[in-house]
Image (cartoon, rainbow, N blue to C red; front, side, top):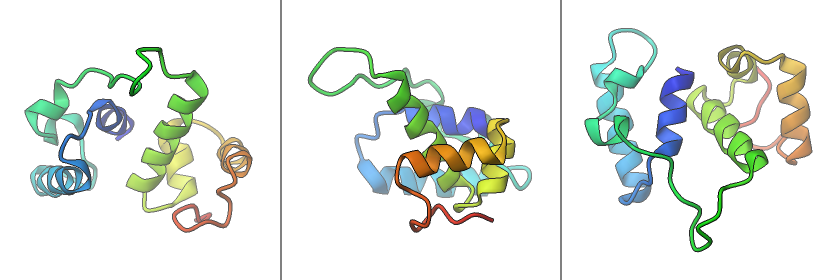
Length: 113
């Protein structure tokens, strides 16, 4: 769900990709349907605060937060742009324009489905 994707982005992932993979496998196994909800995530991830920008102590620019969030939701949907746009509650054309702006149209993981 979008709430779940948002919370996944908040977590710092000290264990990197392996920790993310393990958390997602656990969440999928615990999910009560076809979607992973916030309650399916491990407690430490559910309680995570937004991660700081490394080295600067400054707030991450909104455009970067938006891009990270959209790409995380796109990845959770297996690259399916239609489902991603629906979950983000934005139009497919809006999602397409953003992906094009970031140079991701036609890239692996950004196929229009």
